[in-house]
Image 1: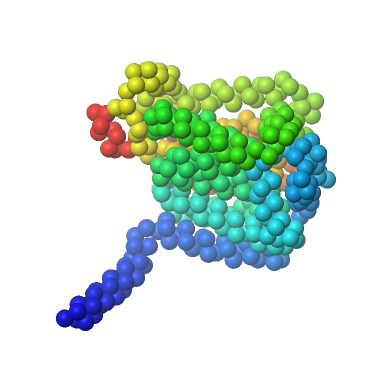
Image 2: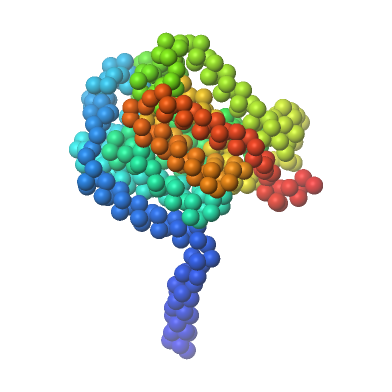
Length: 429
């Protein structure tokens, strides 16, 4: 009897496996976005391999990275003494740990590092495709746009910039948050900031999302976790040369070289480097964030100020009836991508590697606009064209700014979505 039961169980298990295997293809056909995502990962893996094998590597910052890492591994903890052939180290401590690991794995050899960055590229693409499939904003065929950038392929496997690691972690943080893993998402987000500070452009919309989704104690504990990451990573420098570390790793007042600017090359250099221009862009950035937060992101809460007032009131009354709440995946991605894009539009200087800061959000943002599909594709290709003009010139930078404004105008014209899941909406009613 036991033998028969065992055999029967084995047959049942085999039948289940066969049934699951036979239903896999129909399921993929029912969900073409998933099938397309898997196909793109496979095809792009081959493309990346061919690029590494046949396209010459471009030397830009790799030697400087290795010099800075060598100084760190040699025991130097004073940030002003960590330098490379392109200048002093200006990134937080996470950068040093990541590139120390890369140096250990690759021996500092460029080809081995390219293979590592090729793997990173595919991992990042996989995370981005997961976000797109889960939010279901694009038609299946439009996912191909995520693999069409000559510049982004170059940034990852031919330039080996630290932006690649920062943005991969940022996308991983977004994926965690989309799955409502807020504390994990904040830890990964902080790790991304520790590699490059551009990730902070996502911080304002992320903070609004946290206030919408979490109770106050949850917000505080998540922020504390993020702060702890920065303290732990920076501890060797904070206990030895704290001023040098903070002033150089988190310098928000850097002035970039006018020649490398992709977005404001048409601005005369004296104006470009002026403090007045920087302050004007900062004001524009803050105003746009406030306007979008009030009229778009918090519209269903009665506007930004009414939302903040309700959160303060619930905190003072110690009420936990309304929070935590579940936010829609699409709303989370839209808010974070749009908030970052506002920062991109108002950035004083975008260098070529900075394209990776927002390229992967472009198809998403364009499909959130009310534009016809043809115009969306034309704008996307126009942005890609501007980023492939080298060196940038008056006309390419003017065109890029105009295309950015077109996208921003489209986002403003889009329909404001209810941020909360249907279950939460029913609870409020």
